[in-house]
Length: 429
Image (cartoon, rainbow, N blue to C red; front, side, top):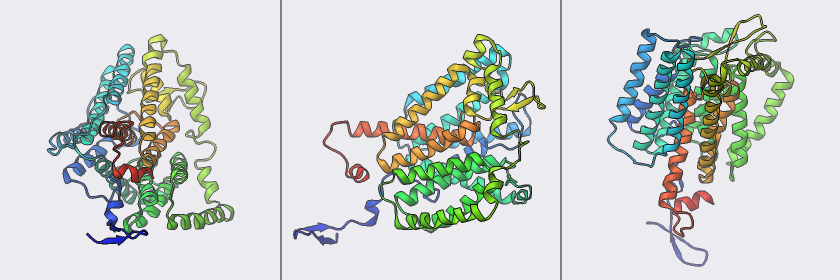
């Protein structure tokens, strides 16, 4: 091995650049096993909407059956994996998920919508189980990379095939025909991962090419919640990073004046903020009307405790010119679908994710926190964090993945032990 002269005259072995790459460096461009990538791709395809503004209320048609088949194929590929990494998978997050589904089923049974809610609960359980199996069978960074690449591919195909919808003001999906907000989350997750990797490890040409394209796509969706969540996450990642590469600093110094110039000299920012006008019922004011109606609904004591089941996606809105409205908040949806008990379980799951993310070494912790903050921030104004959806996949991957790696570190490096790995010391430096 080549050597270098120490300042005091001793010979020291030179380290290759690969030695400085941490053991957790996910990227959508990281090479993973084909079996893992196929399982993740099928999993993401099975949870993205195949139709807009259509909610499952029972029965079976070609779309329902096809999505069930794709989800089953994903589970089959995950189960037949033969190279288990055998990381310890925490039981508590899975137990909380099962408890949430069980509570919602009790509420659905009381209010008579148990069949549709049972089907949706089973889909949610299978999706969560597949994530757990993949994390048990593969390295965590490979699972994050494979899910990220799957979202990138599906989001890109949807955006490219739906580019003609830009004439309406917002980019919607062509194939699959997903809503603008769904494209936003499919592109935001790989964007966040690439931003984190560029700051923490360094960017190659795939990252440099992909970042501006993904940023433009997210903006084109017109998803105000998504754009604001991504902006918050990027700022948070920069503030929590101990070393920021010079190219990132130069990009910031050039980007901020450019954005200010665009905001002052054009109406792009105003048009984006006022998207849909004052009559858009998806605005914050109309959301609060639906939220008030949700918490004022009279479902009795059992309904308040256990909710009405996962099939409950709409809420009656009295006193308005529209009669029903979608529950545009994961937290309000959790109350309607699983009651106060469901809200408590959701809160506990988020707290577990935060604790596991904060317990990781700084670079890894930054990514876990970035993804978690993004999903939770979106959950305030958008539903889906506890449905079989792309938002749930990334949320549950963060909670399980961060908790699993924390358990593994506690197992191999007990608190107070003087034997700390070189890799861990390098990360914490």
